[in-house]
Image (cartoon, rainbow, N blue to C red):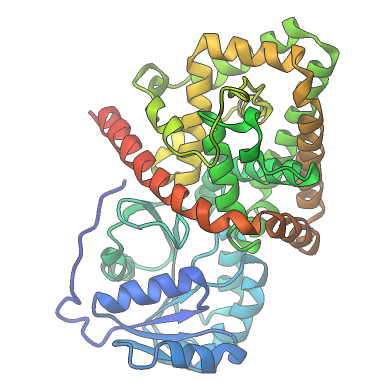
Length: 450
């Protein structure tokens, strides 16, 4: 179902094939630059108020021409990719879709495909083909060997082959799905992952804490938590809002994650060790016991967890055990929804693989897991942090249930501003961590293939 694609120049017979990009945000620019470097002619646009700045930025750039609007791009392009925010996709397609060139191929890059496909069906001419796509990584991640979903919705095989040829320069792994399959899998692999890290950041923000300055958040799993939290909050808010709010499966999962967090926290407050242990061990068996991957070597080598730290424990303030409420709730949520996370590794994002890796690291080690549960019940130093984390998880869930993009943006941006000073340092550490993690997980997946 998935195969690595190799770098290629424009093949014979497609020399005059033109690729249009409507939307030149981070992913749009990444696509434009990589495709143009491979020899494809690119016509691109963004909002008209950005025309002059984009024109100046790409002035003299080989193979990239900036046009004033999507009508001009749509009329002249053989393959058009909409790279706009999920919340605005219907409006933008309604505006420019009718101008699409006869026989052209059209797709989009949103993380939630059902609204995107509905918009294409509603606003594109009937003589236009629909082959959508989704690169399952951020614009700052090397696309090589990353999953690239292709959705052949309304198109012959010949149109799909043209899309595969154009995108082969990304060297990604093609995964062919329907829109419905895509949305279910992205919900399984992204929704709860994002909710956990968003809630962490919100909790630390509420307590006015920079966690790398506190001994209880230094070392091992904590390094991953902090780096990925900062990585998410350094991105644009709409990247995560669209997936959570517009995807019905994602809404269900974010709600369950908040429920799992709340119920586990109540057990901790009660000091009910036996019920907490029974619930967590039961969740572990349902989630990990159902997968053969659990029996193989771990996704993450333990040495990676300690290699990338934003803080350093000292003899006076050594690293302390944590109750890892966010990880316990993750597995409890998966168990409640019947999700086996290994089932979707071919469509997983780097963040999900890292999140699964640290969760697996905790649950594989019975001694560490028991220490975590005992800390949850006995160590009151985490009570305030866990209270804010629970509030945050419930707040994100309510925001998603109500479908409030404006509320999501305000919640996200306020916390983003709090952590802004550390984004540059975190990016350097995070990029190196992601490279090592990716290499480790590639090796693990190779072993599984054998």
